[in-house]
Image 1 (cartoon, rainbow, N blue to C red):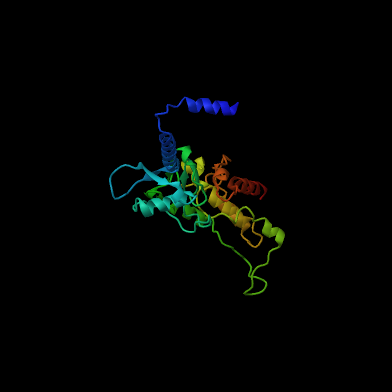
Image 2: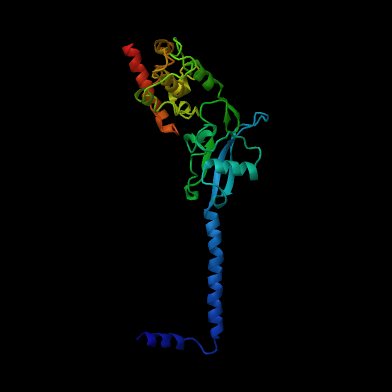
Length: 279
């Protein structure tokens, strides 16, 4: 039956119609389809980045400038895209970066509405639309994606983040020993890289940036309060026992969601509050 159908279809083609033209037409159609496919693939891999731009040397207002790059020619992370834009499209784009391994915290910025490290944030699929990149929120902008971290570092300095002793070590010139149990108490605090993602995501810090120490500084304060080798626990607790320095925290916990290292500053702040009550 199949053979009969083939014979009928062939018999319907006029004898004057050259068979070679049928073959060639099919061949050209496949070529056209093949040529169209790479264009579709290329367009689907083109990603738009809408980046905050502001230059203090020009009087113009801040703006979002769009850049398009081919994701097939770029690394997987947002920092790769920023470096590609700076190297190949716009050398004037300014941002901080250093280690590219999530250790230094230099490339902290706001990506699609969430604080994070550009080196650890994957580029969303091109089909998801444009990716918006802005500086860390509620910080003074120096240029483009670079913010002024002076106040943040001064608050960190104010909690005296170093070991303080009243008595010298038992053996002069030797380290101060610590048990494994006491060392374990520092987990979840010492890993902080001071990227400011947590503090700049905190509404309390937005409202009181000069007086409230913020999640990062208070996390480090608890890190030294909990250190068994430190002998200024009482003094450290008294130094931050203030209506604004400590108690502006309302456990909104934006800090925990924003931390690129998976830490929970809100939990550490609660621990400090409990210590204040028991001291």
